[in-house]
Every structure is written in C-alpha cells, then in structure tokens.
Length: 276
Image 1: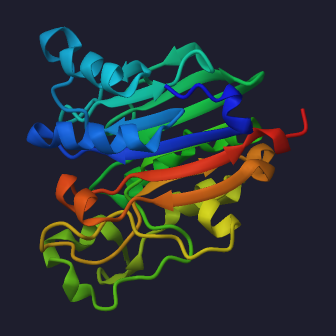
Image 2: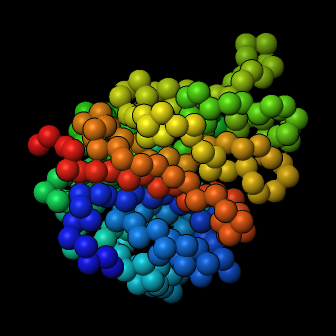
C-alpha cells in the first residue's frame, strides 16, 4: 500500500476482465495489477471466485492490499469484484445488483468515500451477445450521470468514433450479430454503438477522447475469430468529474497479451481540481 498522503489528489481507477476466472494466469495477473497501484479496481469474469468460501476473492484482496466486495453474475458465473484501497477509500454502501436481475451479468453500485468526496461507482459487464440487450442495460446507468459517478467495466461495445474493422471478414460470420447493426432488410451495417450513444448522450465522458487522444485498444489480440483491434473496457466519468480527468492508459504489452483476451484499462483522476 502506498504511504504517500492522498497521492497528491490522484485517484487511479482500473478495469480488467480476467477471462473466465483467469485459471493458471491468476498469479501473473496479480503481479501486473499490483504494479499498477490502483485505488479502485473493477474485475469482470471472476469465475469460481465464490468457491471454497470465496477463497480466490480473499486471496486477490490480500495480494493487492485492497478490500473487496462481490457481485454475483446471473449468467455463466462471470461475477464482478470491486476492490478499493482502504483507508483512503472507504465503501459506505454497496448494492450488488441495481436492476433486480435484468442484466445478463449484473451491475453493482458502490458509494465510495475518498478524500472527502462521495463517489458512486457503477461496475458492470454488458451483454456479450446482443446489442439490443446492451442498450437496455445502458438505460439502467444513464441516471447516474447527474452525480459524481464512474462507470467501470467491460461494456462489450466500441466507443463513439472508434473505427470499424478494416474488413468485416476479420470477424467470423457467426459472430457478426454480437457487434453489428441489423438493417431493415436483414443485412448488417457497421458497429452497433447504441449503448454507448445512450451513455454519452446522458453526459458520461470517455477519458481518452476528453484528453484529445486516440483511444487505445483493449481487445483484439487474442484468438482468430475476432481479430481486430477494438475497445471493450472502460472507465467513464460523469460531467461533474470531467475537470478531474488527468490521464488514461491501457497496458498493452506482450505480458498482458499472454494473460488474457482483455487488456487492463486505467484512468487517473486529479481530485484537487474538483470544485466542491
């Protein structure tokens, strides 16, 4: 745990889909995450972390020197884990499912207290197979744009302005329905971004775009069926927190390529810029 007082106001927030519970890759993933020294971290696909009295959950928290809360997924055992670095960050409230089971996985809400700020953190994993379902899931999150809020998670959709594949043949034909707009005649158009449009229209902000940077990929390096560089993983920021956006990075290295099909995403906020 860092001993630097309040980290000069910087809050490091990460999201990482560890791919089917990570299996034998867990030790390497923990070494990687420890090196990022995060204050808040959302982990998706924490499969089997509830087994043996949540042994993997507690081992993860111990490895990272953080506290953990657990949100069970409705589908495929792809549970969500939110970790926070106490005592600087304290969890005052936690709701593991804000939708009453209407998400394919789930969406949790934590009220975190950090440096005197009450921060709502929505942690989710959007539907992997159906763009229409993702749009409905986004509708559960839009209202939180009115507060000091973050959305962390694997949203399974491209950002606004992100490029389509250079050639859709890079994606296996049976997977196009996961990614593309269905046109009235039954053919496919470009990437279906309706869920992201809903979040952005509500006011949520995409940090790399806010910083004037080309958003880095978070997926596309793994396997042969969806071989195109794309984004799936996000830390989105509500308008009230826009002045605090300080940095954004994706850890894209040979090491992270070997650790899973998603890359860790980190947004850094400077809370000293916030008018309270």
